[in-house]
Length: 125
Image (cartoon, rainbow, N blue to C red; front, top):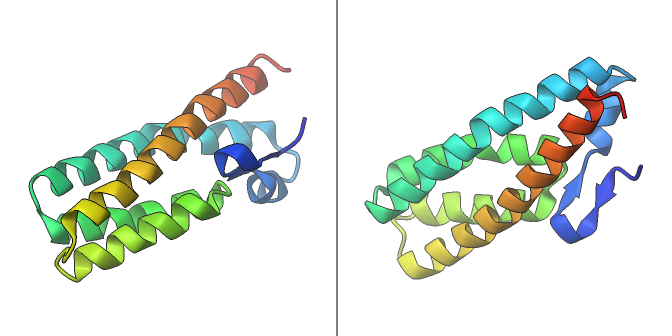
């Protein structure tokens, strides 16, 4: 199975390299991502809706390394743009929301893929 899914901005090469053959590590890492990432995306969405730019910037900053670890460079770069715009007080809130929506769409698709990978690994496939 290929670890690279360019259409979805998902490349698990770093995860597999760090796991060094440990299926348990891969499953646990994916599980942590699946637990925390949707919560962070919801927090960012709520902060944007409330025009709470410090929270938007803070949670975006926390999400960045997770996206990097799971080989999502496009999403990681875009969430960094969201973070920087929020730190600047969101001079263009619509652009910030559009950028965040792009990240949310891509990452949501990746979450579905990661759930399948995790289920396959748990099933020993």
